[in-house]
Amino acid sequence: MKAEHPRFPAGADSLIKKHLTPKVYAALSGKKTAAGFTLDAAIRSGLENPDSSIGIYIGDKDAYPLFEKVLAPIIREYHKLEADPFHTRVHRDDFSPVSLPAPDPEGSFILSTRIRVARNLNSLPFCPHMTAQERVVLEKKTRDALLQLPKDLAGRYISFTDLGPENYDALVAQKLAFAKGDRFQEAAGLNRDFPTARGVFLSRDKGFRVWVNEEDHLRIMALSTNADLSAVFNRLAKGLAHLSACLKFAFDPGLGFLSSCPTNIGTAMRAGVHIRLPKLDRQRDRLKEIVARHHLQIRGTGGEKTAVDEAVFDISNALRLGVSANQTVRDLHAGLLEIITLEKNL
Ligand code: DAR
Image (spheres, rainbow, N blue to C red):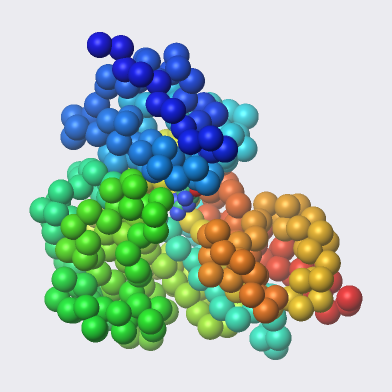
């Protein structure tokens, strides 16, 4: 029986609504991956949340080629690509260490630096389409790899399953644990069985962390309460090199590292700072011009879809596909130098 083309909510302006034409839906709606992941499951978030920007989450690496007809235009538009990432080697690999001058040596503007990558194991469905048992398997494989980290990154893994609600809430309040997913992630199935097999790894100095079973299998991150971009990037590179030697990640030569949200493929890296800019806060057009020129993006103080509070901006890279991790951090550094110079001279 011909499946009815889904009715996206009035006012929805997502990329999935734009590119999932009746013809494309008819071609894809009867397909499912070997793990049983379907297009209807992928687009549920965009159907239930009219304010979605993308509106699709991928629950299985095999869904990328299977749903190419709708994913190719979404990926090319979001990642600003000319080339076809399904049939051209668009991804660029370079995580070599950097040695960049500190962008804010006096610490007058940058409040914190955080660089993260998303990674998913090649051997399991992705987080939107996992059973509780599969999440437990992922958690176990990850814990074993984390226990073998180099000494300077060694630390402890905290499983939310063992914590109990009070201790878990306390950890979230300290920003050491991630909270349950938002309504977009809920509709995508990312909160299924929460908090089973979710957890965080914290190095002794808390400068290297790994979230397990959040939006992706792993969110590997390095962070610091200062502006030492090079140290944070190099710490992440060291931890990631170890985990990449222990675990096989879902990867495609054209699309790069595969993630549950198509916005996070490629390097799957978000490198950013929280930076207080009281003068540019009153001249945001000038800030936006610099940000765009350095391929950066502005988010609110609380991250995605939040407001800027007290002139504290979250500024991070906008590109993840077609640019290497090393180039990404250089672009961020160059943009921060220009922003801080302008803020000082205004
Ligand atoms: N709310 C979803 C998220 C898109 C990108 N952010 C991620 N993956 N955390 C949307 O489609 O707007």
